[in-house]
Image 1 (cartoon, rainbow, N blue to C red):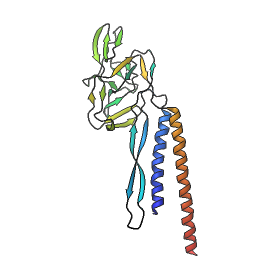
Image 2 (cartoon, one colour; image 1 turned 60 degrees about the vertical axis):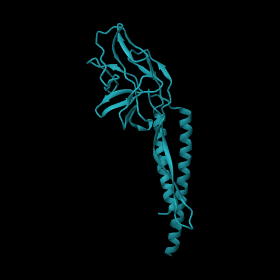
Image 3 (cartoon, one colour; image 1 turned 180 degrees about the vertical axis):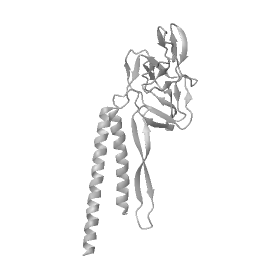
Image 4 (spheres, rainbow, N blue to C red; image 1 turned 90 degrees about the vertical axis):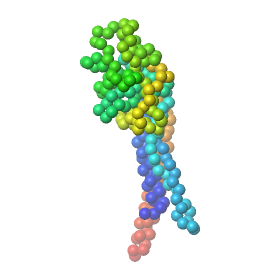
Amino acid sequence: MDNAVYTSLNRQSGLMREMQAVANNITNLSTAGFRREGVIFAEHVAALGQDEPSLSMATAEGRMIDLSQGVLQQTGGTFDLAIEGGGFFMVATPDGNQLTRAGAFTRSPEGELVTADGFRLLDGGGGPISVPADAGNIVVAQDGTLSADGQPLAQVGLFAPEDPGDLIHVGGTRFQTRREPLPMEEGTIFQGFLEGSNVNAVAEITRMIEVQRAYEMGQGFLDAEDGRIRSVTQTLGR
């Protein structure tokens, strides 16, 4: 395959992945705890020969997760929790413990705090958090201490990956890490609030337009190159 065509196809593939990431960001503008994602491109340069110019090729190597703070939105919900600063809640799933910034929890029939998907919220030691059905005034302090009628019951755990680059998006607002997350103490939890998505709608729509135009330009080049090759083939075949 011609080097120019191969390079363009590789670029088109990367632009398609970025368009999918941007579209997913826009879809989750209103999803509490959602973290914006972007695509990381890398340039590879290869020497072709002594008398030929080098070949430069851009590829989409991975995704970048934006960990910037989202806006805290007051809900008044007893088990709605929002983190200000770094850190994640940890929830137990069938695929192992996962991290999330989405703090809309409810009390299960067994009395455990769970996500909308039924995944249990974990304390700093990795155990489930239970709230008795007859518990009265429930308060969550900014350090995560959960109390009922003035009596401490548990402490909501906050965790952070050893390296932010270890975060792997597994779906929705949940992440896995390559290494075990570390407990952290400096995060602040607000009861009765949820953290909104950190996606900037204007920036994402602008980026979508830029990516779409770049893709169309690349497609135009491929169409022109295809026409040139067909023309040469037809001429030589006569």
